Image 1 (cartoon, rainbow, N blue to C red):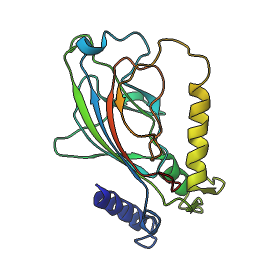
Image 2: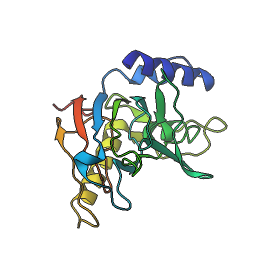
Image 3: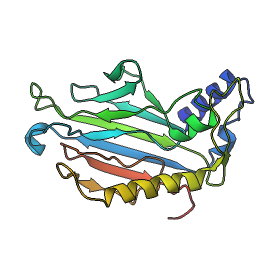
Length: 222
């Protein structure tokens, strides 16, 4: 997956007319690999309104690769025109998500994709899905600056990858420590502390999600 991720970053650099290693020269260290199991409804109970297997969010890093099973309660993506839609899926393919850091780096040439995972639908209560997720990001001290126009379409303030990641995690922790509104999130997890490149799943969740993480800290801590 690491090789595939760097190959995709090389293709993106070529599209921009830059050197092949425009992005990959900065991807020597961090990664975050997740194996997620989404149990069927008879294990979790029925979903209530506005509950998800994974709540709406974007990923923090550069790109995310998903080897996933499709289903009625599967991945959805959001766009400004059509709203929420089922993510395209073809057998034997990998799904690519753009992360927040890549959106900043490319000046919104590629926008980070807001996505969610739906609960099992009433007419498919026994649906059980598994996803293999690989998050790819920058080495800790990389300064990410938006590409100038006409390549970039929006200019963001420069950020250091590690500091940006930490600020995102701090904002999420602050939100999660606030008053709980609506159904309490319920997740079973066997994992290390999420120092990788994924934004923790948030929002009400209807299904327990069993998660295994293999994580490298983007800031060099264990």
